[in-house]
Image (cartoon, rainbow, N blue to C red; front, side):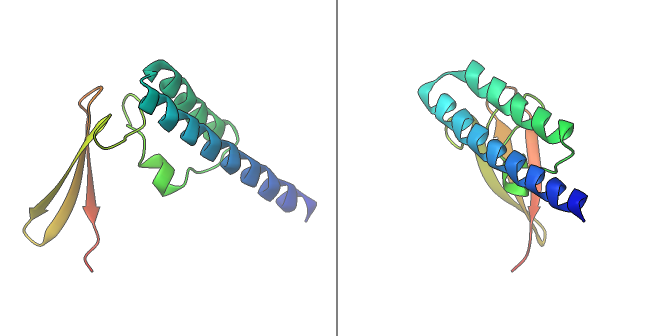
Amino acid sequence: MGFTRSKRILRDLVIQRIHILRDLSHEAIRRGDVELALVASSMIFRLSMRNSVRLPKEIKRGFCKKCRAPLIPGLTAMVRLRRKGSRKLRIVTCLLCWNIHRLELKQG
């Protein structure tokens, strides 16, 4: 019983630290400090891997999978919406490494 509670507390602390580092990364990009943003984002992924904590979807999708830069529309990312038949796609292109992320949007 005690192990699960301590594990939950550790997870909550790691998630809080990840949110703080995400905000720091976004602020650094807005100021133009790309190096600091990349260091903060690499710390986010290192924290989650080291503590076996899954990143929330909104945080995981907010970073480039290739260069781990924060994806901010207009600054580091270009976002397009496309329709392929009955499917809707959100296409995000990282402006630092030009990697493309495609995400199918739910109908509704």
